Every structure is written in C-alpha cells, then in structure tokens.
Amino acid sequence: MAPGKGILAADESTSTIQRRFEAIGVENTEPNRRAYRELLFRTRGANEFISGVILYDETIRQKAADGTPLVKLLTDQGIAPGIKADIGAKPLAGAPGETVTEGLDGLRERFAEYRKLGAVFSKWRAVITIGEAIPSPYCIDANAHALARYAALSQEAGIVPIVEPEVLMDGTHSIDRCFDVTRNTYREVFRQLAVHRVQLEGMLLKASMVLSGKNAPNRADPDAVGRATVECFKESVPAAVPGIVFLSGGQSDDEATQNLDAINRYAVRVRAPWELSFSYGRGLQAAPQKAWSGKSENVAAAQRAYYHRAKVTAAARMGRYSPAMEKETVAA
Ligand code: 13P
Image 1: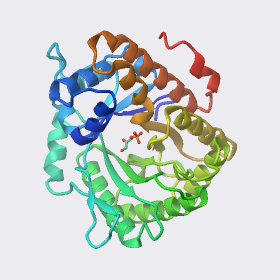
Image 2: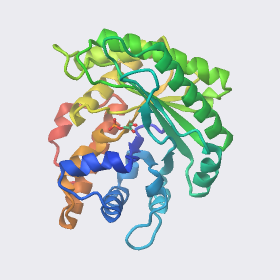
Image 3: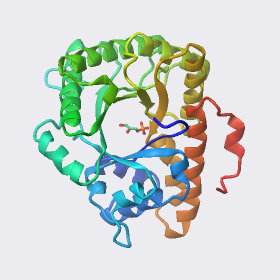
Image 4: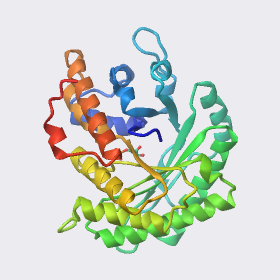
C-alpha cells in the first residue's frame, strides 16, 4: 500500500496465459512463459510504481536465463513476491452458470512451502457472475466461506492474504445492479471473515470496480464509476481493512486507468478510510504483451510499454492521472 505504488498480477495460470499468448501468436511453452515473466521482472525502474508481484506456482520456482531465481529478481528491487493460492473456479454443483473456487485441500502445507520459496503475500480469486437470476445466495455463501478459510490459513502461515471476490463485468447489466451484487457479496465475505477470525488489519481486499456491464447500453462514465465504487465499499468494507487493490477485469487499459483515477479523486472528497490502489493483470500487461509478441528483439520495447503503463496507473492510484499522459513518449 506504499503511496504511488501498486501490484502487478502476473499469476496467470498456464491455461489463462495460453489465451494471452494466443492473441500475440506465441506458443505456450515453459521457456516462453519464463522469458516473458523475466522481461517484466527485469524492467528497470518498475519498482518506482510496483511494490508487489503475484506469481503462479510455476513462476515462483523458475529461474531466469542466467540462473537467478525469478523471485530474487524481484526482492533485489524491493518488490514483494506473492503467490496465487487457489487452483481455479470450478462449476458449483446444482448451480448452473456459477462457480466455486477450489484449492483448500493441503493448503497449509502449500503455504509452508511457498513461504520457503519467498512468498510474503497470497491471493485467492472467487468469481461472481451477474445474470438474470444469478448470483444465487448459495454461490455467494460457498465462495465467501472458501475465501475466509483461505485467508485464515494464509495469516496462520504469516502470509498476508489478498481476498478477491471478483464480480465479473461480463453482461448487459446496469451499474446499479453491479452496485447491489457487489455490496451483497462483500457483506457476506466480511461476515465470514469475522467468523473465521481473520484479522482485517492484516489483509487486503482485491476488488472489482462498480461498473456497467461490458455490453450494457450507455455505460457509466468514470465519475459515476468513482462515486458508485466508493459508496458501495462504504456500505460493505470495514474501515479496519488497510487497503483495496483493484483488478482491471477486462477493461481496456486506459479505461481501467481513468476509472482508478476517478475512484481516488472521489475517495479523497469523501475521506474514504482505505488506500485504493491497483493489482492489474491485463491493465498492465496488454501493452507489453503486444509489443513483445514473443520476439527477443522486442524485449526493450515491451519493457518501455510496461514501465509506461505502471507509471500512468500509479498516477491514477493517487488521483493524479490525465489522459495527456497517454501521449507521453513511451521512451522510458
Ligand atoms: P486482471 O487485472 O486482468 O483482471 O487480472 C487481475 C487478477 O489477478 C485477477 O485475479
């Protein structure tokens, strides 16, 4: 939660990175995944804006081309390594169209190993889908329960949990519907976190913004998103939670940046109690992935693109972004 900094979510599972690599024509092999993550982690100056990186199970064990553990590339720059602790969202029995996130079995032992590998924080992502008759209370309850059990185990291991109940932006729903679903979900998540004795001061919330559905008509503008998001959290997130980090969730990178900026501007006006930062995957990586496209001669261009996205997103995290910054040369 350092001022002016946020988190890079580079914890795509092997099947998720497959989709990202397909889009840029890169084969999804272990050496390509390593080369890509090494490119990001070796970007000079990224630590001005990035204080933590979430890793996938494979990545936390990998070494750079010169044999240096990827984790060490981060810690040498003062960047905290984190680990994706869940093993993905699976269909929820008896609930068509809904999922529950799995990964609790053996988690205590996995945390002990991740700690040895250097993880100081972790993340668990639950997925809530908005549809005509969903989310069901059953789905919210099952996911909140798993999030709370995960967070308790993470704290037991001395690893800061990032509790992520993502409300998907897919669909044609209004921003008001997203507000209601998000508020109801977070209230249940914090109820269960209390039951499971999770210390709110020792966790972060990873949140989705309160937005119109991706395919909604007349989508709400950044000012409306800023107001709705902060007002929704005031009704559902305890002030004891030190920070909230946003996912980008499939917004374009400049949309995610503008909305984060508007959220922070509104939060200052109403004296919101939490730090409001970012933990972007696509919002930070879409540009460098495109610039890289799997070619070693493009590494420097990809690093410039990543540095630029980190810089403008960090400005938005302080409510100091302006679209003119997008035109600044990407020559870092
Ligand atoms: P996006 O920012 O691409 O949504 O990814 C963030 C993340 O870590 C989701 O769990």
